[in-house]
Length: 148
Image (cartoon, rainbow, N blue to C red; front, side, top):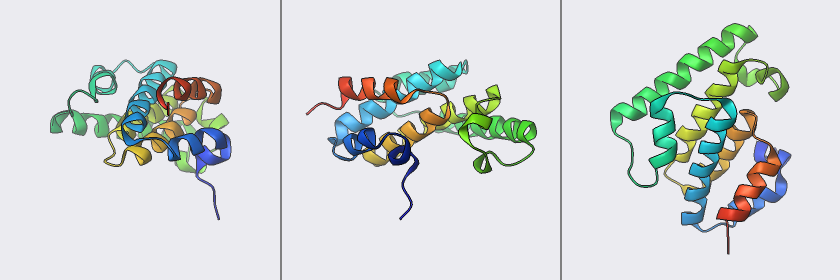
């Protein structure tokens, strides 16, 4: 059985996400997305606004399309740098290029919007790790948000 990337890197955090209440998991997903944007240096107004206010109001369709377009554009630039699709590269190689890191941070914002809060939290965490967030920082967020 293949482990989910979060389980492989931070098994304790993965277990905490899996056992979290849905409301806590959703808040955690958005906090993770904001952290990923900060670490990656994302400056896109729309991505930052969705990461900040996604809990209060669901983004408009135009905002979602803009996020997907931004991620696609960043992924394309990343692929141009790498000479191959980013999915085939390890994290160390991805982190060499700003566009690769930013693409993963934007993907964390998109992941936070997933309908299932637990899937959103786990996928946002996976993308945040790829964007350069340290597992310890994500554990600290979990300490604050994923409370019993």
